Image (cartoon, rainbow, N blue to C red; front, side, top):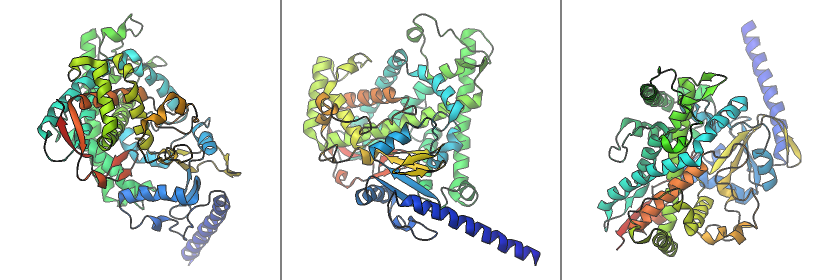
Length: 508
């Protein structure tokens, strides 16, 4: 009897708490008018019958219907603010204290609290540690890797010359994986010749599992997801294998450096002030992390693994997206593709098919720069970024409480017809100096903005340009029959739902 009364009292307490919280949220909702929520299930039925690309299309469609800022309701009182207005995007992304939104926690079991997910003092410390990795002298070394791996991809594509349509997205993915493994860990997985490599398969599978969790009804609730969802069990197995691979590479590299330097494996520091260090020694991201000390102590293997895994995740998926969607638009716009080819010949001369690209000569590709920028406008690799407010914030004339999840759909911002007339048309001239000067800093955000912008943006742009130059120098890219059916989907990265179906012809 007492237990019965306690259960009823508990239920009444939870119900009253729920109703009080809901009333507060409904008051805030008046400032972010969106689709009307149903009791308990909120707006989930908006997406219930849609496929994965359809979910993303509906989010974009709702902005067209409800305006720049609106509120979405999930189960019970779980809400998300969708924000694209300049004033609110600026407030959210330039907030003094920031924390990534719940969505990023879906990859925390793999990446830990590395730079992508970390907050507060840990984030500041890691950002400071990792910034020197993108010194231009180190990026010069990375360009050599991009040359090698793209040359491999170009050779492997030759079997498709004059043939049927094929999915070039798979080739780009494997090339980007080889590049990131070599630059981040100094190891080769040879994904392009060995696509069934277990590490390669696990990285690709993790991307799928994250995507599936974003549309799962229990996705936002870690305890429910981890216990009841079958994908959670598979994810734990895949992550265990991913971590084992990274741990093995770290251990091996530590021992190798110790042998080279004649020290113990626990002490592999080399002189970072050494003159011309960056050109004398071939450094990887992992080497620099192994050399770093914080308050006199080296980073632990766990600290290093978090950052290497983060670099792996951010560095191959996003560049694959950027390169692939640019190929997509070049196939659809042969006049633009031809101008890119003419620039390649003008810059590199008669040996343009085999010429080695360098950090210096990449700066000469002015038209390609416009093409890449326009591609990143139409298809920002991270199409939606998220923040969880650390402090209360005034938005749209109301106080939004700390803890509120906010998503900023960069994809929608980049297709604002008031800023970009005919936004669905591919037009590199939008990024001429004159056109760029008329836009504000919050109208173009392919690498986000503020303190938490993408630290690897120069790395990504260089890899994109090397890949596109070598590809267009050797092949004319034509649209495949299925290209018109392509739709966009997203988890943390923007992806084509059917790959990028193209045909290629050898350039004479």
